[in-house]
Image 1 (cartoon, rainbow, N blue to C red):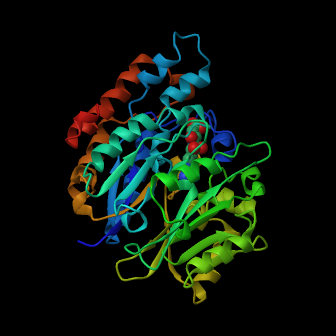
Image 2: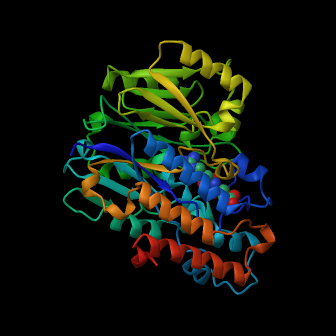
Image 3: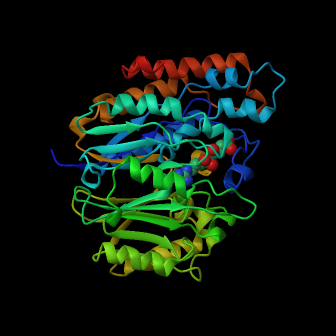
Length: 416
Ligand code: SUG
């Protein structure tokens, strides 16, 4: 079978909560201390997956990681005297945002003709820095076929790497050689620049990318300072199309020129700040969208309902749809529980271009697996979690049992 794009969504874990752990992520800060709804969150995520499956697209998923994380608690010598934020870190369900799980270079782009994945070290945020060893284990299971995949460990922790959220791929089609664009930050004022240039360059080398089809682009510090902690909050690409805010890149004109030089058929859809301010873009998450090629060839933008409900963003989308641009459909989805932590539709998925037959089928969604996942979520996921609940041994037991039930239902108990 031909190479296709498979979106691997993170199933929202049973410990999903609002602990305000991510400096520079305005939604995480705004909703710190709120009561979360893990069951509703996981069902919203699953409904998004079913939505995309129904469009005729290939859909996969990744599993929640062990939480509260015993390895992390052990490593910090947890004895109850530790800071509440460290306790919250051990409970974080942040692995749901699989756009940060790894960077992926599909087979047509790499020197050895295999699809390469590098787990992201996520070192800038303590709660996220604990993800990668368990993520790596899962990726090595899902993409175990070494004739088609190479799965790398994270790059050294001296270089912050946030995975595919700062990486875009453009080309004439998913299955042909692509232009890989790595977006790094240098400074974001009061907020950290999470993606370091040397991490991006290391990933490109590990993947064996052709320098002629690889770009390293600086993110606009003003975008980071305004709350775009990842590039995918202000830009998204698919095949020949880049959909971007005018203020996404430090040097937009040079960026567009380099893209056009490498890919003459590139179409760049630029949203001007006069129509949608950086603030509106970040609050609505217009760009944290899935830009998808539907089976009929049309491109669709799967946006969070917050963007659809935002008057100025809606006005811009209406004008885009009325024009003759490359994005023909806009499809809103409800992922409000994830959005309240700064994770929109694009954060929730990792794109892998591959032949689905080469992926471990236990990670691929069909209606039967979606039904099985839904039944486990309905039966086992906590209805709500208040910040004061973190650390409660009964809740810890429920969260661990819920994950174990999911692994069992999917035949993936080796990830226990
Ligand atoms: O890393 N939020 C995540 C959101 C990640 C979004 N991903 C992409 N843009 N691709 C983060 O900031 C909040 C957790 C908390 O505050 O409890 C959090 O980790």
